Amino acid sequence: MSEMPSRDVMISAFSENIGLEPVRLGDGEAEVSLKMAEHLRNRGNVMHGGAIFSLMDVTMGLACSSAHGFDRQSVTLECKINYIRAVAEGEVRCVAKVLHAGRRTLVVEADVLQGDKLVAKGQGTFAQL
Image 1 (cartoon, helix red, strand yellow):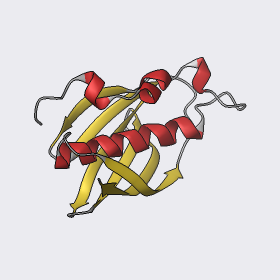
Image 2: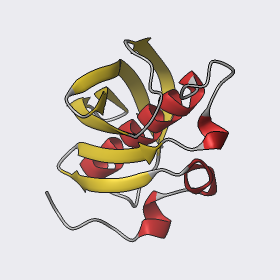
Image 3: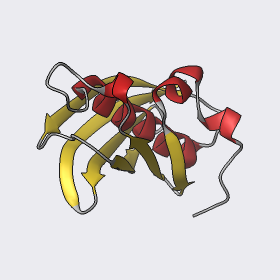
Image 4: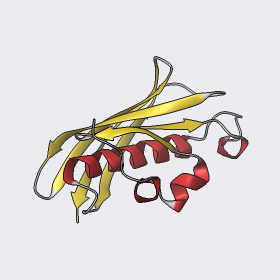
């Protein structure tokens, strides 16, 4: 993997606010972590599905940027997620990989993991701007 760009290039104010932390980036792949925090809990006292989805969306977007370069932007056209298990404590990480990088669109898959256990799986299509 290549050297990561500066944090301010990778992480938006929203990502910073929910606690996303870039781990690795390069060659159409990205990994981002998220630690459980009180503001991420739902009424069931586990990590809110929206926090997990946001982790996945941002990580897939970073994988796109690592494929086409940070001088271009990409936006989510569509995204599907399957939630497998709840997260009550600890940290999760999302690993995303670009499956197809076309001239206008990219298809990306992602896994959200807690340790070696699958928490969620997703796939998205992104447009290059």
